[in-house]
Length: 114
Image 1 (tube, helix red, strand yellow):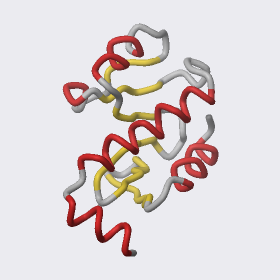
Image 2: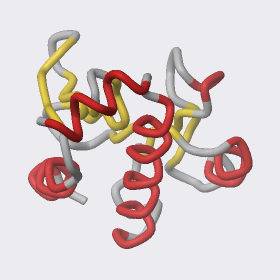
Image 3: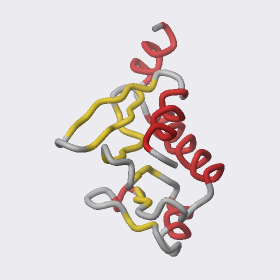
């Protein structure tokens, strides 16, 4: 997926915000918590996954444990064709849902009301 495709898909998920942080990273957040990160060139994409998927994904050529956050089961896709677009979208949506599910009740209530 290219940068604009990533942006369009991430922003289609309810309550998603985006901002540039750390100089060259575009972060996608829900309730103030990251669920996906890409650089502004769009050639790297990181997201959270389940522990089992983490173990499977890092075996794929073009996917590696994410710097600094691999211990939280984040991976980075470094080759654009490492994974099919439909599967990548599912993984991004799953990351979004995992982050959303862990938000405090107060934050979730604000999102629903907003």
